[in-house]
Image (tube, rainbow over all chains, first blue to last red; front, side):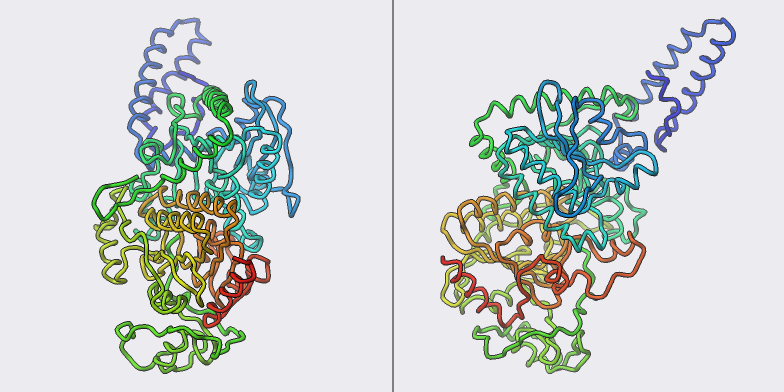
Length: 330
Length: 295
């Protein structure tokens, strides 16, 4: 297990790791200064660390999953671009109002596949975060994304969307410039875009702000990402009358990848490295890259008419209703 | 989402070209719907109003033109030619996919309560109707039913309606009134935005006409999908129309919101709707658009 993770901030439910990680660090330091060999002990402690991590991450609650999805060290949209996209050529601006850095778009290559990327990015340090508005896009972000998608359609390039946002930005300018219209337009246009679309929720799938780039042929989620109609805090403050009940709301909303695959909201779950993507970002990126290349290749093989018909059916059947003749229906 | 408090009935004074003679329909609410009390206070102008007079005026204040909210059935009566509404898709009713529970109540119980309260099985009525003799596919959202929130049933019924309009080359009219996506069905509610939008893309490809009417309030996922995707978008005076809730916005920007923010007049000014139409004029304006679009 990676010791370069020793400095990662631990989430409340990871505290069990403190003891073993500290021991490993001490022994390693001793080993370097004293010529003595602790490697057998260290090895055993590492195994213990793996066991604790496995135990913890196999049994995450919904709220703990949300915390992993929001982990400060979790790889963000542009981290994946840096790791897996060759020859990234960024596209700036929606040609109407501004360039929204919460939504990054560009041409590039994933593996051997030329694609158009639509990437929500939250930003790392304070300066970056402010520039990206913490990943909360304005209408111009959604309109830039649509411009990039139209370009993809024109040149028959598949679209790859990486989703990671708390939601579209709730502000005055956002409403003045019609964020609802911008998202709605993307939903409609994505449903009929004549090129394959692969969407991956890599962190937070925050409501309409996520769905605004989330209508595709295949929708996947990283294992510990979440995707929800409303934030657990928002849901808790409305139904439980206090934001402090977010853990209960998270559980009730069934916002984890396992549940959403059952509901048909997503098609695939991309497995994360042990202990979450933030512990081994390179491995997480490799998983994402493999998923993209494999899925894009599959989708490209389809004639465009069939692709669009399948996409319509995929979205058409979403939802769960009852028919009065009592037979449950998808 | 779905958190529009009742105190948002304060659209303020709305000046509009209200013409009592433009109204031809049988818009009165049934006697049983008239709440107790002969008098009411207008939340717009604070005047005391004779309740019967307000009802005869399509639930619009005769003094200040404030538009009171109307339920789904009443809206059908106001818009459609008498007895012309043929309801469809009533066999589709809500399930409880998440087995959602909070504070000791279940979603299932809540649905039953809303059904008893409104007499409707869900937050939308769909079917065909005539408006001044023109046949249309009509969807009416019912703000009385769990804030007109969008769950699987609403999405399914509207999608079926859109498909029906596409196949039958019928003009589609949807009256929107919604607090947004319904939390109790989780991401499945969210996905209804994608589903209805995909169906609207096909209607658009087929050359179908779609008119949406935004009533107070139209917010959240409803606005960010089918409400904003119409060829012609009309709104009622003073209607609250937006994506994010006002409380969420003012908490985020830590400031008071400007007067008239997210009201129909604000949207008209910013270029997001075609017209503000007083309720009594809706029938004639819809008929006019249908004729001008030549279907």
